Length: 478
Image 1 (cartoon, rainbow, N blue to C red):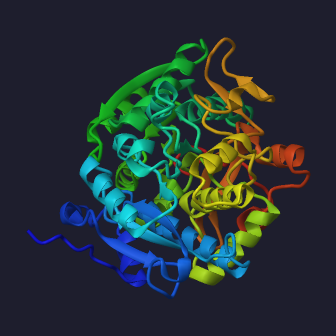
Image 2 (cartoon, one colour):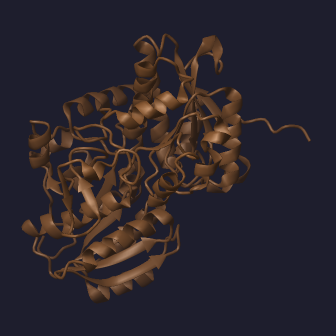
Image 3 (cartoon, rainbow, N blue to C red):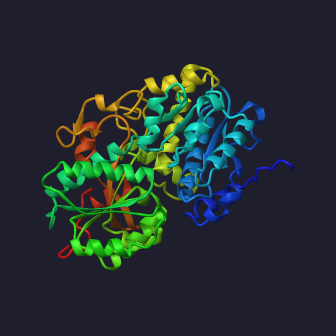
C-alpha cells in the first residue's frame, strides 16, 4: 500500500478549521497526519532552519485553542527571526493535527514531525495521557516536549517514572491550584463584597480526568469548611449539551454558587444559554472555556456576569499591553487569554534555554536549564516559571503561599509559577469582555501593587476605571 501523504493546509485554511470550535470533529478520523508549515518562506528545514514541532488539535473539539496557539507561534517566529535568529539560525514551525489526542493521532503526529527533523515539540495542551508514552524520551531521542496540560495524572506519571519521561516538561500547575484559587475567591473574598443568600454549592462536572480532578479537590475544600455545604453534586457526559436535569436540581436547591466544571466551549455555551433562560439565584463559575473568544461569540450578552477561572493567562502588566498591541497588528484581532500567551511563553523559555546551553541538540542540557531557571514570561508570576508542584522544583515550598483551609494539602502560590486568575464577563464599549477581578484569590489591584508596583493595565480596566466584581444581572435586586 502506498504511504499516505500528509495533507498541507494554507494558513487561511488552517485558521478556518481551527476557528470551527469543534464543528470539524467528524473529519478527524482521516486527518491525523494533516500538516502545515509556517514561519518561513522556504520549505521546511531549508537553509538549516531550526524546526519546531506543533502537534495541535486542529480538527478536535479544542480547535479554538489550536488557532490561538498557531498565532502565538507566528509571534514567536517573528520575535526570534527579527532579532537575528536562534544561535544564528532562523526558526520555523510545523503543525500536525492530533484531533482529539487519540494514541493513534499522537503517534502519527510524532512520526511525521520526527521525519521532518524537529528539535522540540510544543503541543499546547492535552486531556489524554496518551502523549506521555508516545513522546517519552526513548521514543523521540530525548527531544524536549514542553506542554501546558494541567491534570494531576500527567504530573504523577512523571514523578513515578522520571527516567522515562525526563524530556517532558509540564509548565502548567495542576487542579490543586485551580481548586484553591476557586475556594479562596468564592468562599473568602467574594463574601466581603457580596451577600450570599446561602453558603451552598452545586458542583456540575464534565466526566473527564481534568474536570473530575478539579471538582474532587473543590469538594474536599468545601467539606473541610463548616460554613459551606454542597447541595448538588452530579456528573454529566463529556460533551453534553442538554442540562435540563441539572438545571431543575439547581432551581430546586437554589445554591449560592454553581461550579460548572468543563474545559469545552460547546458544553459551556450550552449550559450558559440554558441557565440564563431560567436562572437560579446563584453565582456561576465556568472552568476555563470562557477563555476562548468563541464562547462570548456564541452566547453574546447571556455571558454577562459569568465568573471563570484559568491558569497560564497573561498578567495585566505593561509588557502584556505591548504584546497585545503587536498581536493585534499582526493578526487583526486581540488574543484570547491562554493559548495565545502561554504558547509564546513556552517557546521563548525553550529559546532562552537553547541560547544558554549553546546547542539545540543538547536536549538534556536544555531540559535541565528549564527546570533550574525561574524564566520570566507573561503567564507566570513575577518570580518566574516554577514547574508543576508534584515534581521538579516544588513551587509549594517557595513562600509566600497559602494553605487552604488549615491543614489541607491543597496550596496556592502567589508569586511563582502559573498565574491564577478569576475573571467576570462585564459590559464594555466593545460588548461583553473579561474583566480580571482576582489574582490568586487576592483583589487584582492589591496583587499588582504588591508584586509589580503599579496598578493593573489593560484597555477595559482603564475604561471601567476599576477591576471589581459586579452582581450578575440575573440576581434579583442587582
